[in-house]
Image (cartoon, rainbow, N blue to C red; front, side):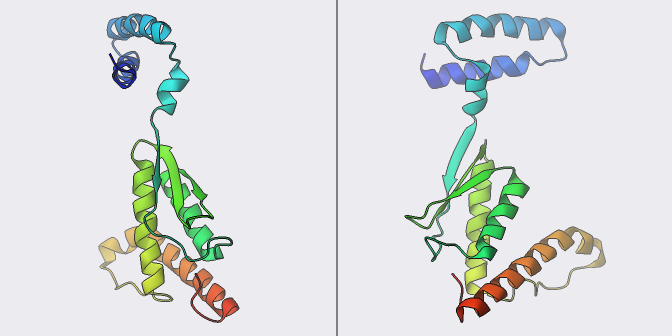
Length: 164
């Protein structure tokens, strides 16, 4: 059995060990413990095996000192998706780290918003009006866009053109 297959088997057993059925939970733990000892795998190893990384496909123009609105965007994405990110000064890409598919979703969101910031500077907050039913749901998105627009406008003015 490969290491990956063993890890998957142990993840399933550990999930069963948290069952509300006491007998099922005990049986799963009885099967998991010897398997973990045999392959020298800890519970921490199982948790860490769920951490993934995903690079953005969008490369930022500034490779040494990213603009403030860019760091705001990355920070907001980290908060929303519960991930961490690292800016690679060599390539200009951002790498997101998180559990399961969160890193991939964060990188995709960053790519989409980055392209919009590049192609539509100063116009992100000019989203078409919504119906009264969806206005409250859209409010956080509108606030995010306004903050990014303000940061981008300040950065553009500071550098005399398109920041980036």
